[in-house]
Length: 556
Ligand code: BGC
Image 1 (cartoon, rainbow, N blue to C red):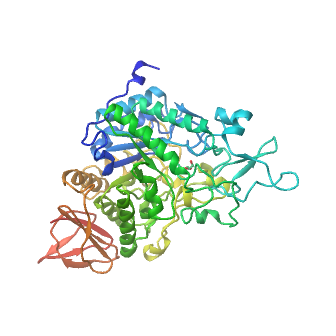
Image 2 (image 1 turned 30 degrees about the vertical axis):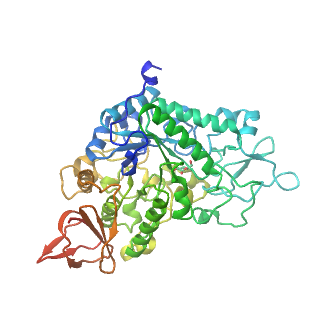
Image 3 (image 1 turned 180 degrees about the vertical axis):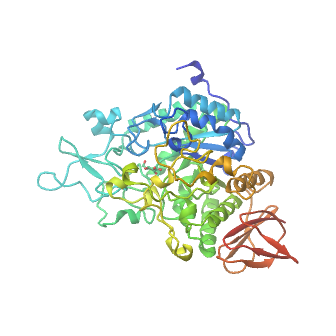
């Protein structure tokens, strides 16, 4: 390891270092799913060097920060969310030096870097789990039920399907809320707390600007690990507090981490953040994760799950804003990520809706996360052959619902168009990005791509869309540019304006945003001068025609 690794590169300068208004309150953060973003060495798997080489693209797109999904040493039983060494880079993705160089290069461009931390479980290859004595203390082992302990200790189901327990050769059982290769840690053990604080300091010392906390609602289980008594547990995730999810005890952990993050940042004059991936049953319970002494952000999955209907969108937006305002936090909007069906497909297979939904999201007060490829309007890939699939949920007969992604908006699919992904599994949103050229791998790297890309993606590449004002990529660029230019568009006030049925109108400082959720044009008095629209809008004699499934930003 070089000396450089212990001397982090300075974070980008921005107003709001120290404890003042934070950079994260209105930041647009781009999720890089490392294995599918850009491949530098030709093995068909994206890597850190590939990501570093493409940072100028992200700068040019206009985002403020990048979130990198896990690139740590891992057997890859769950796309790297099964970590065997939290301080090492998996050779698939490069070296620690590559991580260091990526962070420095991002900072040089004025981009912040957030990395994943996976505290609910480790890999079963983690040295702690490999050592039977340590494992018994640091994971959740229990005796089985039945005459000879042949039955699992309780009725909990894995999010990926099947029982959440696996029996060892020694006859006892260990809990894994996800795959058997992902044993759950015992957060009653102080050594577990100490280790994760040390891991955070390790990456902070390397210069990262924050952590996306995986399964932030999962570390604490109800005392006694009680049965749920309900067969379809996947349906209950995010709908109610379960003995293994959203237990009140998780908040003490987040408070401790906030003290660590604030202390670390204050000592260096910067703000480092935590963002919760938490599935909570209501906006109010989600807001508990972003109280002033807890994490900074929590993904708003209720917005992501909302159907494309004006009333539903409005009530989810109102509930989210009210809940986060009650604790003084901004709302963190998101439409796509590596666990859910891409929103182009989820919103009824309609690129028009996806573009409109994005413009709506970027007009709302708060922060927003973008998932790689949504700026290209990529659809979910729905015809992957079984033999290439890698989602562990596929092999365990589960579904990508609940803690790892919602179902699909079949009800609002236009004209019966297919709204779902491929059986609800997650490989279809993880197909490597198309950068250029007419044929796979479309500039993804010098080799192939770990999942096959569709033959018709030539028109969707970054190169094909760049400079085309009608393209989705240029729409994202223009929206992010305007967001930077219009003061108050980020973390400022918002109010609703009157609008016809099926249409939303909201005002922000200097801007009015209309969203027509109906499948046909709607006319209304032009509210101002069109600034940006997801579909061509016309204004005649002071009457605006909003195209069906469109969103327009108006200067007022
Ligand atoms: C991650 C998933 C992962 C799961 C288990 C999630 O929330 O986003 O990709 O499978 O946690 O770590």
